[in-house]
Length: 74
Image (cartoon, rainbow, N blue to C red; front, side):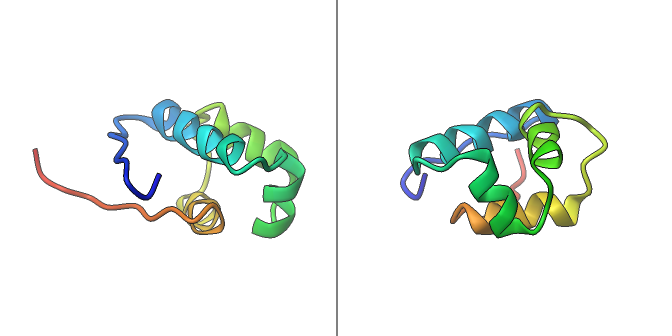
């Protein structure tokens, strides 16, 4: 996704973007969860767009997938 921006409007769209990136990299949920120091069910919840995910954990998953979160005004 280094050359592609994704507009994130809610937890579900963020989860879809993270899942797409993980699959593009050929990684399993277990791989990313281990690298991020979280459980697979936690990663599954993030990818499913659950609103209970802690922002710090989500940001760690982003970093581990080589992504950065950039905010901008409309």
